[in-house]
Image 1 (cartoon, rainbow, N blue to C red):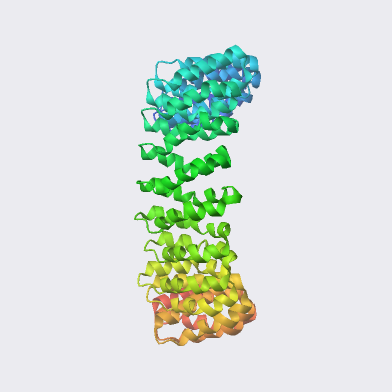
Image 2 (image 1 turned 90 degrees about the horizontal axis):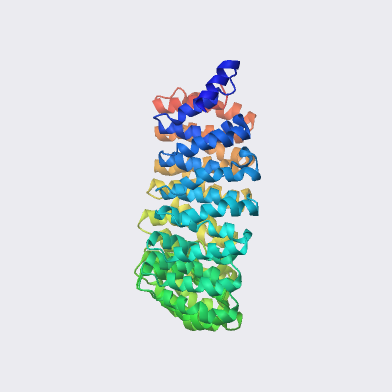
Length: 596
């Protein structure tokens, strides 16, 4: 390839092939980054060479020189998946198989997976004849390779070629898959188990019953828990394929066994897939089998399993058959949920808090008030911030069920308590949820109950709280509008301008900066600007230079008349201040507002 390129380039003085010579040089370069870049430009090279030479020269060159860093191989495996048109379209797509086959056997998993992904992609572009002549032999070679790496790669390729080959080849594929399911290497059994569900979906129903079920049962009782847990995933696909009457005999014994597996990882997998399993097995089996299994998972001795199950509480309850849903929840599920509210593990409590509010819509008003509200309250007071925030951020669905009055009597005291918590991070967390709460509870309620809190935060002794409180006001004004701001917020903010504590005076300025845009020109000019200008005579330099910064911030909101007659003289005065910083910020404001 190199020789012919340099000859051609030399003979005709033709530059178009020069980049390819450079590319080949780059692929031999010491520097990984260079090699990586040249692989990423492969399509350009293939275009320059044309389909014929890409097939006869570029691909063999790539197949022979594949000994490189994993990231270069990864890039190559990805590129080849998009190469069909560059080798001349679907009738020549089989030319891409040799380099991808060798990439599918390398040691690094990420590279193998990418090669398999590209092979799966281009398998769709093979005609049925090419699949049998070129693709299927490749799958067989991989499936019977000496190294486990090639056998694991084969597992991902059975399902893409099975539907489009003749029945004799189908029988061979099924046989290969069976063999890999009982391979000596756990890695291969794991790969087979992870593709079992996908393979079952393309098989004829008779073979699902005769072949897949026995493989499923064997993998689900494998000695390695990493294989058993993957069988649980396959269980969802298999249960969906089978008619209802076969589930009890073919799937349920294995599923029951998995739900009580000695390894927590397998039980975790059952909990994690619970809603899908529930849909797949239908209402009858759910009532008789899954409800007790779910109770056990919620009480599991491992926190990870309890957390995974807790995450599914709302979904599981929603999908219960409606005729006796409430009764099942109240007698079987709710007692377990009550225990989880005071679980020792914060991940479990947090998982539960993120879904528990959803039960209120399922259980209705009376049950919510009697049984769920006490749980919400307990969680609002939990020492773990995640738990509290998960409750606050889901209040709206409870509000819909029980109404604002009931909610405020029960939950509001808890929120107020958190807002005045001694730990500033707790206060901060509540502030961040204020706009959300305000939106959920409405403006009248907010003014009556929460407004004083929001104002109190502005004079908190921790700067982070004052800053968050300022930002919070801006979000509230965006929600409730300028008129509301003018009546409830602005007078209180401006009142702080006369506070003896200079930090509070500065907060007035920070609030004005945040609110000017949301409040608009009129309020800013008539109510806020005079206060800012008056503060330019403050004794504290920090306040004065913040006046300069504020004028710079609100300048764009003001009209040019106010800028020229009111703002400009004050900034010019500050620009001659005795304090360095005041001068600096005043000069900056003059130039930004173009008042010079």
